[in-house]
Image (cartoon, rainbow, N blue to C red; front, side, top):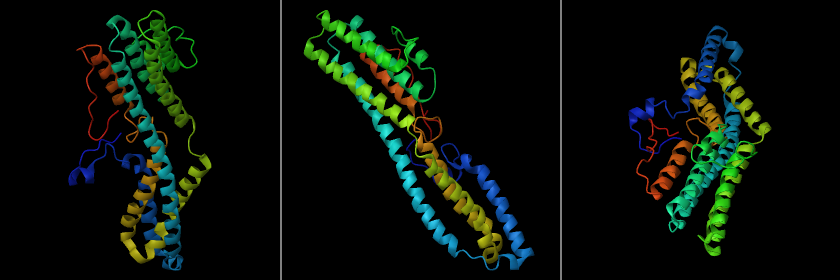
Length: 298
């Protein structure tokens, strides 16, 4: 994820980490070659391109930019919803820790470590990692090896522990209902994240925009070469950077749980949960904060 600190003029001009440029560099290189070829064609055979002008491309570019804005808004909504869900996970974990402060440490520790395992397991599940290993790092969960949804099994184990404590008299029925409400919030976060992960944007819509953007950018040099000459590559690269960049950025935001530069920093948020829960248990050996590298958190 891009870190929101102010960049200087030099960084704006030359920053690559966190930029969309590395993702589209190959396409821009092809576009540059096509632009050079269009200029050479216009100079060698001027009659071939003299009747081709930029007016149709102006209308197509306007329509394409509107459709791209719709898609990017939809993808950004997915990204922002995912961020709010993980913010809710952090709030629910902190609330659970605060609401169990009256329990003895030996009874409280499995509950909070279970939540740490749940957070790590959910991040691994959304990124296609080993969620069982992420959960087992913090506590043992009965049936974890055969559970179809290990992250949900980790949350269920915390719920079972709470019910057991209520049966032993360590929790009142009201206290149990309060803790169950926090666990329900966490279950909602998991289900909503799984919905975002499993339901991408319609492929046909994305494919139409991909094709239209590429055809538009590859034909544009031939409409400009006769009038602009060797200024054509510069203008075409700027337009290509905009359209290809928006296209690639939409692809990244569509799956907010990936490992690309603009995806959510799940590792950093899981680490936040871990540190908060361990500190609530009185631990001093907290794992280090995940620091940003350049303009990106992981």
